[in-house]
Length: 120
Image (cartoon, rainbow, N blue to C red):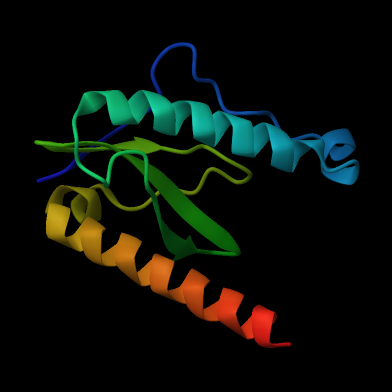
């Protein structure tokens, strides 16, 4: 059974504005936020899943969560862009095996598309 939380104090997500979307700085701020949060998550144990981001398609975007702990399974809601979230019942039903499958699937897709770009 998983639980979802907001990021800990001191880890506020970047705020999206027209200005930072236009000049591309929002993407850099988001990447820095995720890297810093992932570094902190990795302090919670030795699982390779710590700090990984999992996401579910919602509306015109994604509900995104970072793996904070695996014993017990704890996720941090990533309130980025639209801040979509998933249903509490879905969160409660998640297992570490489900998260591992999602992370591995995303990695295989990234590898597939990077090979396709390299072949072009």
